[in-house]
Length: 90
Image (cartoon, rainbow, N blue to C red; front, side):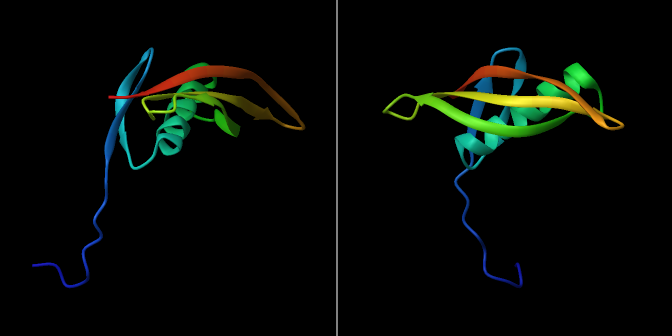
């Protein structure tokens, strides 16, 4: 039996084209994970996510569209690009 109070979490499964599904508490958390995967896929282990914006969503909460800047620091300059993607609640 655990010593402390148990925190009840409501984990959901989310999907995004081109990536394996993730489990997260919120759709925004899932979008951050997918953006991180995109950054690492394009720029390697040092790739990062700078901003994440929700552009549109379905009123029933099934999906949302996000945009993010992903990039890589190289000395005094930053290389990167904006990406757009949709997250679906599975």
